Length: 344
Length: 243
Image 1 (cartoon, each protein chain N blue to C red):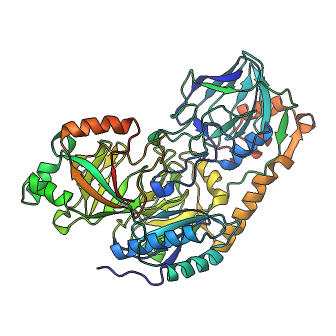
Image 2 (spheres, rainbow over the protein chains, first blue to last red):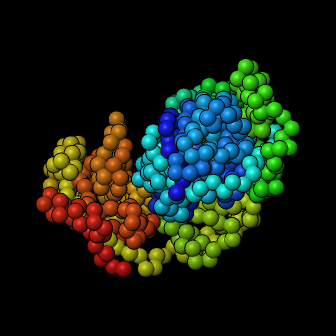
Image 3 (cartoon, rainbow over the protein chains, first blue to last red):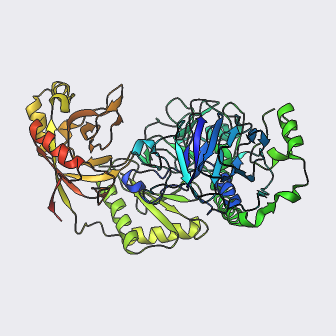
């Protein structure tokens, strides 16, 4: 039996997978990964199913030590400096820790969440078919709470398979696309325009329940209390102070503020990765376009196994790239393969 | 009586969910239509729907846009809503034990004072009510009940409490509720029930369904303590009056 021992970890780090849909009618939110493409890419690199449980690592650093045998892992999502016992490790690649070796991860650069997938997955007891942590509901396995130092993630010994990298679409900082509704008629046209025409920032007080936005005050036509109705990932609700909150995977299943718009499925992970304080914009699209993008996003997820490449034909010097990353904040090849452009 | 929308409005909740809205206000007739549409969809499934979430005035329908488009699903939902029968068949009725007042319901005396009556009268009125689960939401098992008599309607607290106990029975606005997990609430706390509407490793995990009928039964603190232990061990404690 191999395991990864958490030797250090920051807040907002937990085991996540595709979550547990199907019980929202009972008030149980699905939870699940903030950035599903990054989760699926990490899993694909080590031969797991797309949405196997992996470690979602928040913006701060973390380290993991292999015990009881070698452990093969992969990293995707928000890039960081990473090394195993001093050997640099690239994101969007797999790597193997020998028994006793430690994987060290720095702070997230140009994003919020990174995913550490473990070959053969993480052992745990699924609840409603999922290991995803939902601390409020007492759900999640092997721990029904965010990870802490000393926690152990049990798995099977590394297969010894050749390491892989994965080619992902180029990063973009294009506006986050939304469709208006369900309660956009609670807002005057000029306030809807203010919403899409303004620059926004995500507040540092955001979490897996919701991202608070900072920007102009969005006014309601008549009052900010509506009768509670259902929510989805990406619902953009506007409370009384006019500062929108985007609902994230640990949201309440119902809410009583008018929802002006909803982030489209294809852009949700990219939105979840926007760092606190970094300016961004929204762009309204039609339902037809949003659904076409959702279908393309679904196809992208299922094309991931075809995007695997051998490490040997990387053709680039990883150490040189890493040095470039550490030295400057230019968009490097490593960053370009993730969803975030480095913050200038 | 607020108006219900016929046909209901189809509101986009992103590219993977539709809100089918029957009313813009809390309205028992609209809620019955929500639950009726939910039952019709369960009986005659539409390919692509992944789950449905009934609320007071609307049914949120989650779906997979790879399988069905907004327009195609919207048309089918309107057709189902048009034929959804408003009557309920096979409604379950639960009797839920509650210990009112004291440490179990710290707002009972204030509620009585505000409404110009005695705590005993508040309990008598609340326990006499015939309620229905209008929706379950916010946190697991939090059941919002319709049917609170007008005399007990009261605005929510100005300052919501950040932590209220598991099993709290409370009133807020024109609603009463059964709260399962400890958590924040702006409602007035009348009592507590030992019943767990959500409990892991129990079959079923969720005790109540939207549409279930509910009556309360007042029990003393000693009974609460006994039933709380039984419920912790997995007993329903709530009594199924009619299946």
